[in-house]
Amino acid sequence: MKKIYLSILGFALICRFSAYSQVRLDSVTHKPVTSLYTPVVPDSSTYKSRPLRIDEINLVSSYYSQDGKHSAITGGIGTEQVTDISNGIELKLAWNGNTHLNTLSLGLGIDHHTSASSAFVTTTGLGKKDGSRVYPSLDWTTENTAKGSSFGIGSYYSGEYNYKSLGADVHFSQKTADKNGEFGVKLQAYLDHVTLIYPSEFIVALSAPAPAGATYVTTASGNRVLVSSGSSGSKVSESLPTSPRNTYSASFSYSQNVNSRLKVMLLADVVKQNGLLSLPFHRVYFSNGKDTIERLPSSRFKLPLGVRVNYFWGDNIILRTYYRYYHDDWGSNSSTASLEIAYKVSPFFSISPFYRFYTQTASQYFAPYEVHSVKDTYFTSNYEYADFSSNFYGVGFRIAPPKGVFGWSNFHELELRYGHYTQTTELVSDVISLSVGFK
Amino acid sequence: MIKKLTIPAAIVLLSLSLASCVHLKEYQKNRINDSEMTLGNRKAERNEINFQSYRESASGANAGKTGGGCGCN
Image 1 (cartoon, chains in turn brown, yellow):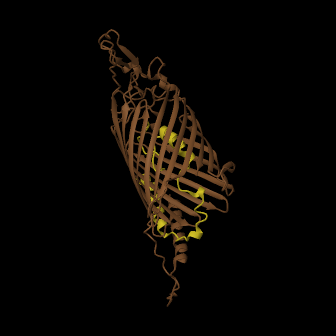
Image 2 (cartoon, one colour):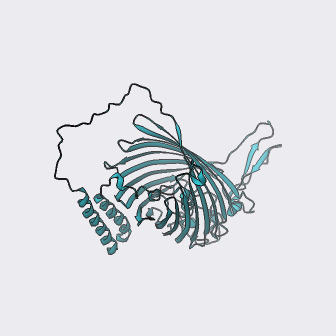
């Protein structure tokens, strides 16, 4: 650690010396007696149209596949096979005001996943194995290009069969006087509802016989829900109960051009969650062999701190680095470090191999299968909260020719990226993503 | 306690060093304005960040999810 401190101090001193040589004041002052410059007074009397235009369209698709041996649904054992196909489209509309540039971003994401362990929400193993999630978003940002400031608001919705989310944010940014730095802040809230789908062995059986003609539907977890009483002919729908989960966060960022080759960004989030923070269909097996439903505290505080450093090395290599330290009040601490080397084969084509390392300590509420005591107040066997390390590596390709991809002028960017992920918990996954951009 | 504060303290020291950065003119920004130099995630990284937040305890400080919005952490 002494070496790290000395290195950072040395870096600061180098910046100071370079800064001093660049910003020394000119001692010779020029005071022209006459000027040939005539200021132009803008004509504000005529109407000027500010057409709304499509600024950018982005499409991102990904295929994700994983496997493992520690499913939380079966108490920390069992298959974790999952596949996910994710598609998202973002449409950016822009229009100019008198002094502001306005941007309206409309987004829509649709994911479809399959999960082998979901079938075991019911003890028969015949439960629902797949699901879909739809998540639209809307964001409006207005930017004062003269002052270098921007302000915006955003809203989101996410719906899937066991989870509904409604979110909103307010964001603001301000550039420094010399336009080489920028400070940003974002305040965000998610007001979510978790559908209480319990493992089938914990569902109370019907105590009264069903009325004649009544219609019941068995849900994913084996719940029997009355959807038609039969006698009156009208539908009586009893939906599953839900429990709230709220997340509030404040995100801060500061970016700075250090010199003509180096940019740095500092990031910090402060996150507070409350409500039902566990998942009702996750099992935990105690040391005496009895099983129950996962139970976690109803509040959580998170503090992630991050730094990004990008450096243009030579004429065609860009080093993109990232480090994050994370701490929460559930006892988990982690470090994330990544390095991506973007090699510009030409000004418009780059190849970017990358590597990411992650390590975390276990939450105080985690224990593997049949380790928890019945006396524990909170308990989970979800390996997301275990002690482990992970490696993620792969390569990306990016094409952005000035005349457009495949000669299509509006098709301005294409990116393909593949990554392989492994955890010391024996979880393995692969992801491939395709991103296309139109202007 | 000292070990826990080591890394956050290093980040704070790094941030103080940013106060001594050069003033760049527009014609000197050709490299730092390169699209690969953007201080943010690539568009194609969006779903990678999502699955990492599902499988790991940590989230946030990367312009991704900090929590909420899905049946994850």
